[in-house]
Image (cartoon, rainbow, N blue to C red; front, side, top):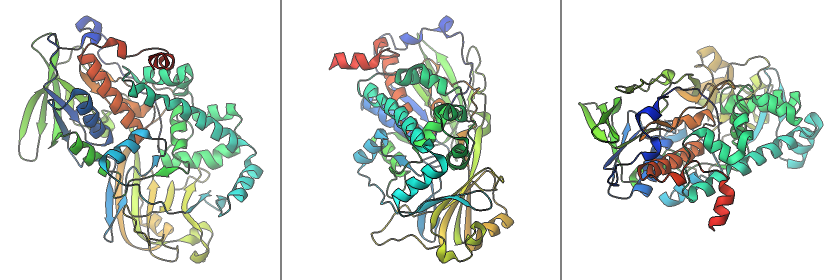
Length: 501
């Protein structure tokens, strides 16, 4: 995960009960759905199409609408005949859905290339990784006491509880809201973690303020572009993505998305969905989707619709919800802009206090908030295809670097970071929600048989979080359609699963 779990308050269809019973979201005759639409072909949408095919079988038509490139925020750019990740780059070793996707699709794990990390405060390196693990541990203890041990234990405890979701989903259980899902994993503790700042939770743990300022803040800046005021659960997910046991997909992480769509036998439509409207001809509504392609405008009817793209105004999804009673209210909040700049050039190591680039030992540099630097991180990056003899470029050589920053870098800033450069490619992402501990969580069910995947990002934004949400929505849609209420929002699932075995 390189990511986080968070809240956003939404008031959508508060009078559902007066319109229809959600638990009865199935056609009376028990027939399977004819057509299902998924809006968005990022990792969330493509995983949803895959899981929907698993649960509803081969006869259902699954259409996936994508206005841009398949992969969404998983993307690559080409530099000097090699491709590099410009979007989501890392996957945790405990991300079981992503692992299973790679296995089923016959993809390969990308070979990792070692590199050291440092933290820069605008004037000097305040924390430096070495080649000696025990020396690094001693330095951490000397500077921060046992804060790093407390942090590690906290993150591991949270991840251990989160891993329960795989057992629940393997047994077919689904949740009608992000709150229900979190409660099933960690009880009120997980819910409370979406409502209080990360900094408060860490201080209560006994983590020192110095450790928060010099280690936690830099990690948050690179992983979410935000600070330690983000909710504790989001922070825990992000910190899990800062560990060593990470991996990526050979050829690019976006290959998972295209592979899942192909495996699901989904119809990919390169189109912008402009409106979604309910049409009632019986007990349950169908949904009319109006869409625009490069050549034409069309519309079609679907029994089930999954929206797998953010709906906040700042993202400009272009989707209008028409004809709903009561009308949809716009999702509050916005998405945080993160700029990824891929530079082919010579790093200016003098800026970091190393006049001789041959003595600069770091592959990546994180930054603190001390002097409010104009960039969050800079790192030497490897191509998505790594040959056996590949070696990382030395600082005195022209290499490829990825710079994360809150705003596009101007020429003066580029000249500050690089002695010279051959090319610059800029990608501005609406990468993560703007997190705040006072927010609530977005709904999963917008209307009967109309689902919203990206609400999970308010609790944690990562490839695996989207995959977990995709599996949950596929299960929820299947159980709602078939009126299997005993498989939704069940309590004490660990005990229930044990008794089933």
